[in-house]
Image (cartoon, rainbow, N blue to C red):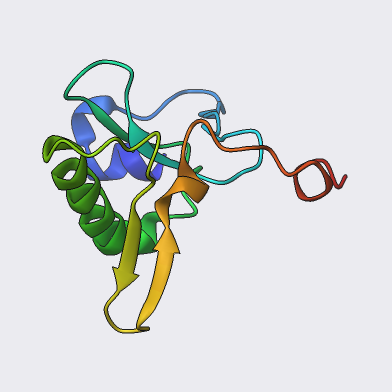
Length: 110
């Protein structure tokens, strides 16, 4: 209804109804930042909207990942380690790989 107020051409429905959406998550609820099996394609996905505040740093991580892979580095053999500027800490991007090992105790706690 509120969206219809903002976009009058939608009109107001004559009966109550809702909109449903699905979460796009990985098995462990940890997003995937990785290269694709298709050459030249990369992915930042399965964040289930909890990562929207991290968009800036994820953009930097993905830039580093693309540069790393396009400079003839074998990402599957030697995972990228990314330095967080402000925290002065390293992050192993392999933790976010599509090929990562599922941590059973954390993933299936419930």
